[in-house]
Length: 551
Image (tube, rainbow, N blue to C red; front, side, top):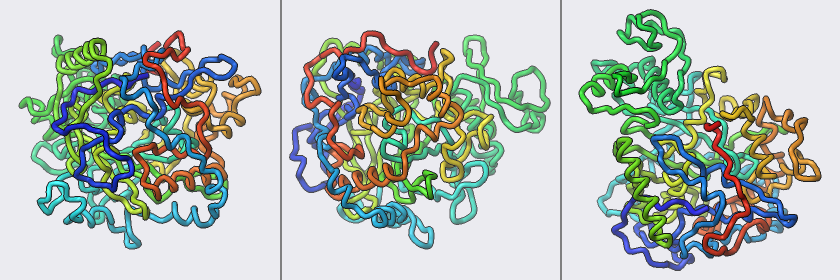
């Protein structure tokens, strides 16, 4: 379960630093030189009875082109480089139960319900602090913030478009999705959301006029390209657009964007408006499975709130994560890179991934995206992530087989039969009523995960979920699976009591500022996690599970 080394090079000399050193955002020295290998990869997959559990299937699978990282073999062994054999994520073994129990319910609720992104007048606190940034945040010392300045207003209309204080669209659009099995289920510690933004040209008519309808259609085209499937749209006049959206050979009224990508036969999809003109000029490349150049994603990770028994996103952000596609790689580029990586992994198994960038401008993942983020400081205000704290994000965005163009959530976007066609923010409509996703083999995905993992998290530490849904033998019965088949909130949301405990446990990590030791909200020491493994130690899993998109 070794995360693949990424093809980025670092100009920084990577030497071990003290984990207790004061935060220095200009520092590119890694205390944990394999910070890109997440804590979940140290899970003990065999229980005391000798039964194998498979949480590895969430990430390590046979990919679908043009994402050529086929790492399903990592379900079978702990194929770590030598430097990663000792588990560096020591926060997993901390007992926080006494302090969590002593935390007053009203106090922790007041904390998570305080917005640390917007002030009482709904003004963007973080953006204001970055213009200009504090001296300790100004990594290059030029008096200006050189990275992403958060500009989402978190004010979404009935189509998921974010509306800024000036009443205009910011370009961000929220979408709903079935969370990836495991860590990202709210019952395991956090609520979160994801927003996408395409470059200005994709939001404009051919003459450069902002156009909401053009933008929505271009986003539908991107959805079709990523899902490799037709995407339903509202009834649209093709004559006015001069484009055969449904590819039925005539201009009429379209109700879908029809997916096609066969360049050899001259069959490719086409963007609308100014993006279409740029595509014709060779400046806006299009390919199935790839996002447009300049695509941005924004991901807020939050505490868990509730009203009565109804779980909701808390106003307080734990993190704000950002990524932007800065370089276009062709299918050949991506395949060549994946093959070179596979060769290096085989020839030099102890080589570790190296990265370039900094806390201010972000870090390249080596396959066309640049990532940066913001995280709580000890007082709960948002600050830039350090270099090492951002390297932590690299293991999931680019180095695992399940990604599509290094992205996890958008391929899992809800389809047109969902509320608002899947274009909404979780504050508008939560996971209530969202069905279990059907795998390509016809099995419900979350039910399959519970049956093959015997738990609802990688560490098998979520006792509440296990007791709610699995029988005394640790099995998911057909009757239990029906309990969340048409409403996954029953499975994915914790009880209010567990939410309070998770909130309190995570805030302890915030106050310690010990993110480089792990940022999982765990109350008690995790027993199903290795403190160290032997290189290539078998996991006990003998047959890799296929991903949700393969039969």
